[in-house]
Length: 459
Image (cartoon, rainbow, N blue to C red; front, side, top):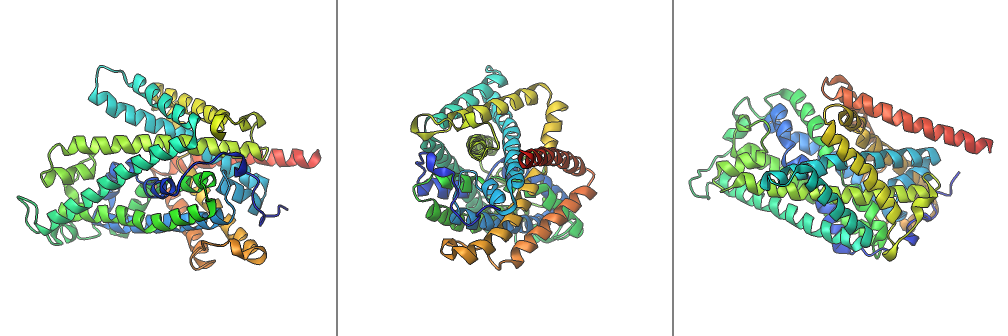
């Protein structure tokens, strides 16, 4: 059994360089992505104004996971974050499984982000082929991640500021429109919230379907705890970042949805069009579509940068613990794990090529295989926190500078909520294939972990 209360061996080799402002903005902007700006339309279509409740439920679960992560990462900072925590709490098989699943998730989703950003850029400059834009983005962010970790921090800092500024501006304009202060607007009251079938036009089933549609938009909160290990003061940095981010993120998400369904009837949303664009058009903001295209473009590049960073640090941590090739431990100038970066970007670039060449076959299977992996990762985070919290309390309680609320009851409640989401996905015709493919991918990684354990015991 590992001495799970001892400090992890990891992050001391990495040079560091991330400042508190980097982590704070990464915590705020890390989960504000294209899933919110574009994907929220699918949730509104099934839940109507009840999408506000859907986001409250999904956001509450994400906040609990972030708090659990923050507690463990402040007590035991490590570049592998929850993979290291899972190994210390449950054994090598758990660290191996969650680490490789998360790495696979990041490098596959990276392809969606690169292709999406390239599609927007191609629309602006049709003369440049889409594949050229993909190559440019991959080269730029690979170069930034190879030089020094502060480059990743600076990119994410400014990306996050732009995303947060866009949401704040939207909220201000939306509230002014609701009050009838803007030109050519009249106070709308709650007519759009209570009309068109009422607040819950699809009933609670609609709210539940909305949760399934939006919960994965909260993915990305994990990167801040990975990055904390490369900050000047990991313990204080992660605690501050988690505390400052959680309620603000929920405010941005839930506040945006409340504005959207109050300004316009939920039936006014158009399929395939961002609900943010629909609202901005309705209140007379010129070139609303292009403005939102720029915001989505920034969000996609931000996610691409964060996923490349997160995947490289995760595979580096796996290599440190003997769960990945030791050659990936080679550090370049500035203490950057360059081989880990190149390995991640190489697989990510293969994913991009598959997405460009076979988006509806080979790549679709890969995307389905990681569709529900985030929930598996969250579940292992919760189980690890249950185990680690008790051990740290007994041996080194001074390390608990950030504590999970209402422990252990809220952790168990979060686990139960995840089990409910799994059950709902199994019952949903559109979500079931993702769940089954993800279960298959998880079973495969677990099988490899089991074989490794068996060989280690026989050796």
